Length: 173
Picture 1 (cartoon, one colour):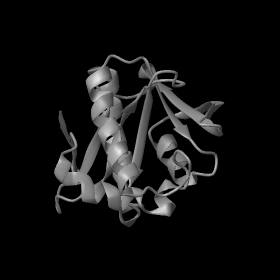
Picture 2 (cartoon, one colour; picture 1 turned 90 degrees about the vertical axis):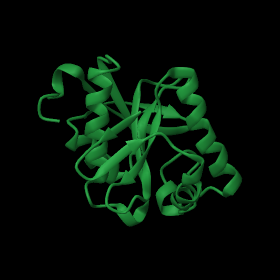
Picture 3 (cartoon, rainbow, N blue to C red; picture 1 turned 30 degrees about the vertical axis):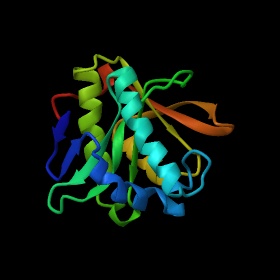
Picture 4 (cartoon, rainbow, N blue to C red; picture 1 turned 180 degrees about the horizontal axis):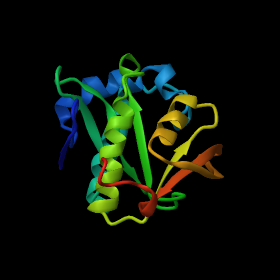
């Protein structure tokens, strides 16, 4: 699968992306609001990346590598999660801290929202965000997502931001 935006290429991960993936997930500031909140060592990052492949195999959709078009560097991941028992069909994003504040998360997530509604025929998409993660909350709001609920994931409270297909303007994205 391949989705291109003005500045990004969203594509399947390759084994050669691992060092970039490790750099992202070994940064404690990046992982602060994700999972257990701790940076990942090599083996954990490898298992995390491998789980992405498994999700694609089991569900037919998943998370994509975010490649910066100009540099060809993998700067993050954006995609869909819906493992067994999950609170909803989730759009999530994580970027290397060096690429924060450039609009990449919003740009890539808009393209995937369009894909989720148009190609995957989803009626509702959520983003689960830690209450302290103001950067991700801003991205969700830029996407048109609204706070809808709170829930618990891995023993931690998360905010449920969401958007319906009818509220997403697919002609403008």
